[in-house]
Length: 231
Image 1 (cartoon, rainbow, N blue to C red):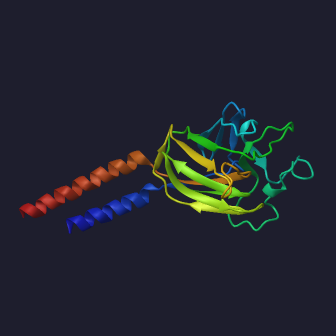
Image 2 (cartoon, rainbow, N blue to C red):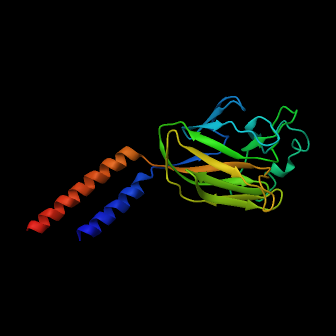
């Protein structure tokens, strides 16, 4: 009986510990951006702040930048990236507006996704506790999500103008931790991927309250078990 109560209490606490959903979609209400591409910049969405760590693809460029998939203010051919335009596609994953790309070395004032891209790294700045639950991507290539050296999920798209989503459940992510999205490239084409990522989703877990409740509940159940044992 006591073991059953402990299991039920643990399940309830874990369920209650997930307080709210957090989405990083790089645009829309509540998004604030500071800093400069290529030297490290910060983005806040759903009251959670991330540092976008500078990393340069094979062709140079300014590192991770935001590409507007509506192509507002871009050239008629969407800066040569019509494959990133999602407004006319069937889009069950909600990819829209800005997506995060690795910028290639190009003379234009707006970003152009790099054909040869390495990891894009996002470092958690806010003092929160999160669990990473998925992300979406647009365009061809293989996109792999990792945390602490462990692969969490992958999106594989073999043609232009595709959309995909991966869902998974990570370990707890806290301030100072970094998450990674590796643009692996199409099968047979290592390190080649020319797309963007969007809609990184997380569950916020209030750690201190959950831990206190957990220890309090376990202490009470342990005392109950001792009383029953001596009765």
